[in-house]
Image (cartoon, rainbow, N blue to C red; front, top):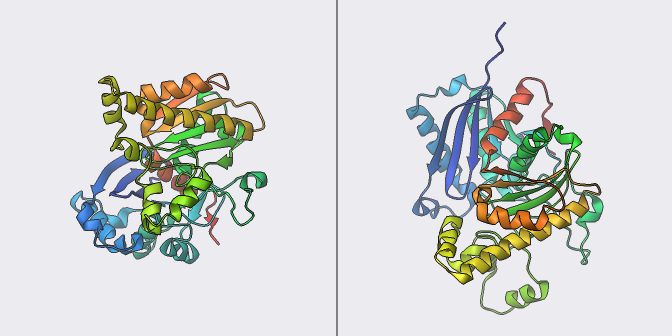
Length: 358
């Protein structure tokens, strides 16, 4: 008897696009990046306000592509900045929608993932899910403590792609993900470095405000200098947050967030570009070393993923500093859409039970 075919709509919002895909079981049948102009998005004060605009873009594209919404079995969105939760597949419910609308851990385009999934799924009377949200937090208690009791470390990371690629890396080693000890670095617009111990992320950098600087994020900064900058009177709170989360890193130093442009400048002899780019590699390598300690066991591998993992120059600089710890594996790009579809498929097939967000 042929296996049942499940059709899943995947929704993955970013700052300037809404990435969508339609899967039939493991096969991707449609994929599109719906681009949104700065002028379109500037009309909305908050991320939540973009909901109807993005929803209409999705449904119009699906209709034009001949996708019948009533043929879908589930809709899944990228999980946003929810309250700290263990990894897994979650049913979108009222509590989750409230926290996504409120931006309980901050404003981010990924907060729209679960909202858009629910909005489309509810009208069709089918389930809506998120998988391994940005706020996936399985950190050990000692990893949360800082020197200021009022401030605790939290995990906001590229958990979705890291946990999916972690399964691929473990398979390449002849192991299961929950039998492996991996240090993983997602190298994207923001950079996440995490310790994956036997299937759990026991420590991770906060990709918005911690760890290495990236193409547009400032990363960890000297606390005293940051406090003085806050009270200098030169910036508003909103301007400072923008500087740290979308106006720092390569963009602040070199005027571009495009690593290809940076490498072209290095090839042309730009010494400043080389210094800044190598400094980013150095900071990633240092964080990998720290996460190797967090594993409390010998790492089976160090795994580099994300868009910047396409760069042989950058990953080469990282590898030469950390390959003494463990073999370095490279999985360039991001497979978030496939990870979202796979998690949903596990639930639809009864292989995994969806968690309830409370």
